Image 1 (cartoon, rainbow, N blue to C red):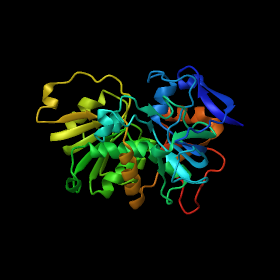
Image 2 (cartoon, helix red, strand yellow):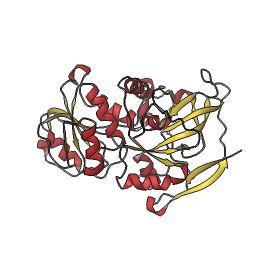
Image 3 (cartoon, rainbow, N blue to C red):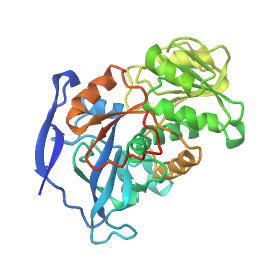
Image 4 (cartoon, helix red, strand yellow):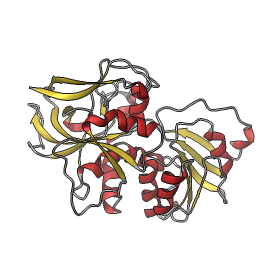
Length: 350
């Protein structure tokens, strides 16, 4: 049995159309894996880093994509708790060793043997994909396939960034949070932060799409990426892969504040004066996610409820979606949609 897939043989700028459309054998799930019929796959900036070679090649050829929504089409021999037809999601973290010091300490996101969907193993730019049952997520019913896809990376990473922002649960009410870059992750993160009671200050360069969406979602203040907010911030998250924003963000936070770097890739960070971190200011990165991050986030997102703003692309337009993402022309999140995707008439698609 064959499936349609987009494969990357050699990384190249996305405008050179490096993905090849191919027919490949449908993968066979291992004993602990699920075979999914893919209904939707979110387009993430990490996909762009993989396709263009900003992340080192870990598998070639490769099927990209790591925000997968689909239904179970086959079960490995040792899989329990799932049935054919169940709707599940697959995220960036594909598998960990389970026995290293990080895994045993509840920090599986740092596992040295970790495997990653759409980078070290094949992902969701295909009609079928396989994933370990233990690393898949059951999706809340109030998210249809298109809305659920961006939650599986943009949403989960935004949630982990908030966890590492240095604020305890009771400190969120009235806290001032800065967001630098306002794409897929930012537009979900603002909804979480506002639901927790925070004021959100958004710095992003695109006025027509990103700044307008930030205002629509309740940002207290919106400015350009290099503008200084009118008040000192308790914490900031940089989603844009631009190292030059680190000293900009540090200048805007108060003493004891934290700047969280939310991307897997970032351009070089320029040198800056020690005074920007004096006063116990902290700069910290976010590396991947744990399964607990994913489960906790999906529960919180369903309770709010978060509403993702999506721009959908049919499967044959994968290059168009990546080019649009590179040009910052996506308002919210981009999603590849395959036949069979569940689109609920009760949930508006924005």
